[in-house]
Image (cartoon, rainbow, N blue to C red):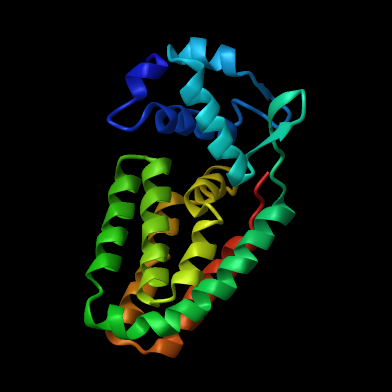
Length: 213
């Protein structure tokens, strides 16, 4: 399948970015790979503008880095860096879990929908789908906390990209990864705020110790 055939209704830069992300995470583009705008534009049969935009956006995720007068290169994402990100997520999501409880206890449907999305992704063997709906599950909790600054900080971690890296590089069982969210949903349905915080915190701590290289 050619690269353009993979594209749907997203913008050109978003389409290019998704392919590059997939290739970085699955090792097609190992650390140190020089991502040349012209070569990528030729491969994807697009102008250099959307490729340039995709690389600019990816540099903010720290998957790639721009080296002055040399170009854009794939960064090495170490287990230590991933552990630091999960540490930040543990702090943010643990606190958000408490404040989100009243909203999600009244209406846990968004969490339930995200979990069903994860289960469907497992059935279709889609790492991207699993990452997408896992990210949605956790973002629902942050949003329900009502703290906009917390959401802004959480978004800056580019959770979906790093969740994909965890799934692919961390030797994660997809079904287990999806079902690990079920107790959190149950706690919002029938438990209390303290239990929700405990489960969310434990969930992030468990992933922080996985290998990511």
